[in-house]
Every structure is written in structure tokens, then in C-alpha cells.
Length: 67
Image (cartoon, rainbow, N blue to C red; front, side, top):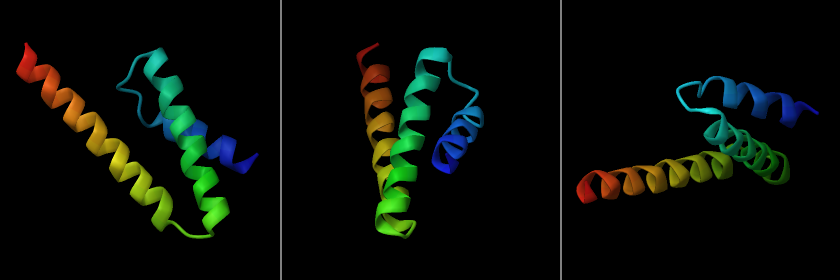
């Protein structure tokens, strides 16, 4: 339950996105929370968040270059 509540809060603080993207942010929050529970630390969820941010950055950069 706690992971779900925190994932919802994680999505809420990413309010710059529209509803479909917020669903993805919520699912990402669930993944990050699951990683926290499974590993017992914050390094894995931090690394996953950094990788996701990097992936989004590269995709956005490529979209700008293609425009």
C-alpha cells in the first residue's frame, strides 16, 4: 500500500505531463518503489530513475533534431 501511495505522490509532483504520460510516471513510481523494497536501499531506484531520465533526454533530443 505504501509503495502505491508514494507512486501516486510521485506522479502528482510530475504534473507537467498530460494524463497518459502521468500513467507512465505512476507505473515508474511503482517500479522504483518495488526496487526500494526488494533491494532495501535507495541506490537501485535512484539508478533506475537516472536511466529513465537519460532515456527521456535522448528521445527528446532526437525529436528536436528531427524537427
